[in-house]
Length: 268
Image (cartoon, rainbow, N blue to C red; front, side, top):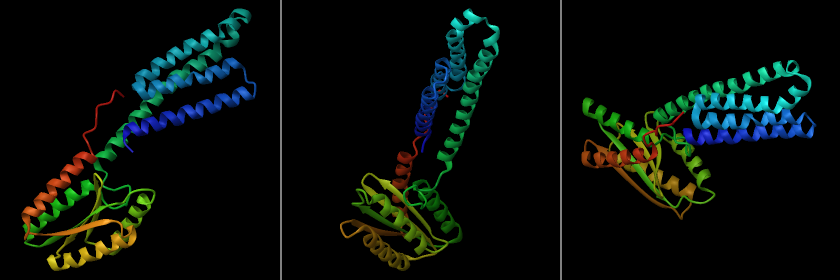
């Protein structure tokens, strides 16, 4: 979940909760002015999520003035002494709600931004994601060059995983691929338009071993997803196929750029 989705979800949840509280107060025949006072938190909450702490504090001050205006007829009737404390507490509550809400939103944005920058887990399969494909292949290629070793990559391109069964099929495939690989192997998943890519990096494995694993992977995908899938499994062995590996790395980088666009600037 990115920051914008999280912010919309928080806004919706907060509005629903505040409306429910006000509804309960109304049903219990609480003073109508206090019901409206509770509803005044709604614009403050919206201002916090749109403009941050400054907007929340400004909205809190406006809400405080609005509450004082609601109490003005009663003040004229019985005097200000009876309502001074209540107005002061409400005003402090409104402003504090705006300030603390804005600070909390800043922490939420920072946490989600950090997660977006470093997250390497694919939500659908619980395997590693497209970002991990690039980092793993770069690392293994460098290691192979340095120590004169070999590494193979098995790539399964799958089309036809659609409909209601898609999420369950991807989750099952993720579990089975993870369970079927060696500890030193790395398994990843990414999407490229209608194509699902399952990528398994096999350190210290030659072409023969990669082909054997590729056959098993293709059979597994077909068994779990059904015979209606179009499964194309290919292998790359490095350093024997440097151009093929470089080409796939370029493809993976384009997927990363699509999956993780540069964060947009926010006003809060």
